[in-house]
Image 1 (tube, rainbow, N blue to C red):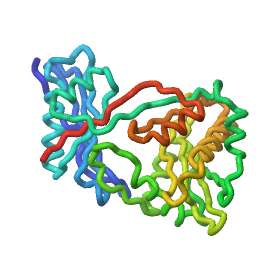
Image 2 (cartoon, rainbow, N blue to C red):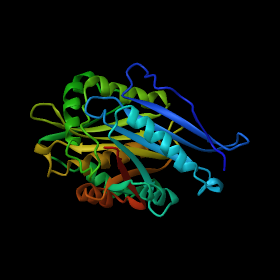
Image 3 (cartoon, rainbow, N blue to C red):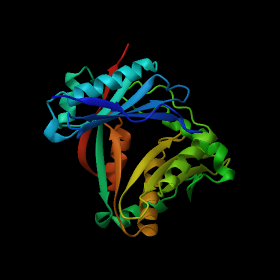
Image 4 (tube, one colour):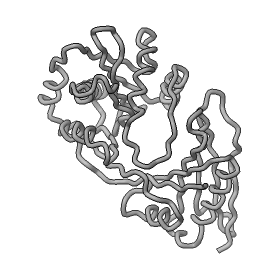
Length: 296
């Protein structure tokens, strides 16, 4: 099969962006598209060694070297940009899993995806969990950008994600500052979606000590997606994660009545968060693996 690999975008970086995206299209001899690949190059300090791959081949064109040729272009670009690791995700039992494993990628993390069907949610249990007293703490929430009076301690609370179990993935260090927090909220808003955050605040000093984020689709239908959930180490063991998530679930149901469900994913080596999700009624839907290719 005669293939043509075409680079569709350049490496120009938009102002304020934390990554760049390169894209390739594979076409057959007649110019028909048969596959594509995208490479996200992380540009924030602490992650400039890393790139993320998304490669897709039309089912009818598999086993005809389309994926192999696209991957070769991606790896060459990653090396030329000084990257040492390329990560990619594949669902368990799919052709993508076999493709990555055969080309030197190793499993670095296993994720279990789960969904809470809002129609089946145990509302009395959720309400009891959300209203249960947690001495020394209170809940607050907002949509979009973090309120100015909470901004500094909310940014500081993002360090609660630093020890999140990430298996053997070479993610590097994600450094959060106020500009990055605002940029993340702006990116969600630019897609027309709603970022809803519930935070736990210490009543002793008014600082944010934990948070959970939920992104709701622009039309308020279908499934919303949980983003980060974390509690600062000094405040763990008080049930704050379940408390915050319970409140977030109820708020999503009340504010977006046309939502069908909520989606989440958890690393298999994070049993605490798996337990929280199980207790709230999330049911596993599938397993995926995070693969890593070490470029040396």
